[in-house]
Image 1 (spheres, rainbow, N blue to C red):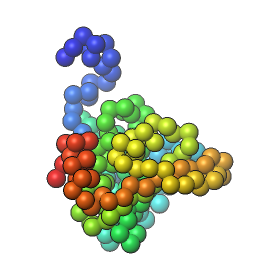
Image 2 (cartoon, rainbow, N blue to C red; image 1 turned 90 degrees about the vertical axis):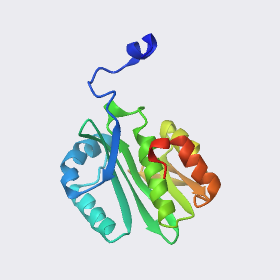
Image 3 (tube, one colour; image 1 turned 90 degrees about the horizontal axis):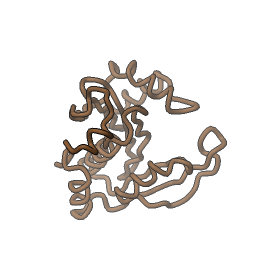
Image 4 (cartoon, rainbow, N blue to C red; image 1 turned 30 degrees about the vertical axis):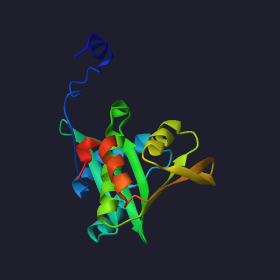
Length: 183
């Protein structure tokens, strides 16, 4: 480890633990809720997660959790609509952000969408969330419109799309962006 890496390293004891991605189950909701509550002014309830997981059980959604050192540090989901995957959420615990967890979650969602035969992915992102917008751009998402006052009836959302996710070029892009998730 370089001297700079040691100086910048967060001392939480789990920096070297690898990220493990697993399907979300009801047992994860209790660990998700504090992250959800701390991330949104109007968070989803545990009932919403339970409902989403029921739809996942029927094949209408994919929900994943990220764990590091056995602790849940993030989660993400998609819903499927006529050949497209709509990213419903990607959330990483604030103390774990900027460590590649959102990248890994989005890559896993993209692979799941490809596996399902989707040709495009879409999502909404807060106008103020430039970090997330940058991540989505690296995955090939481009702005396609604005939903005015989408968040809490106050903040606009940028609608972003990524097309041709079923092609070989996108497959190569995913492998390059996140080799750990590659299929």
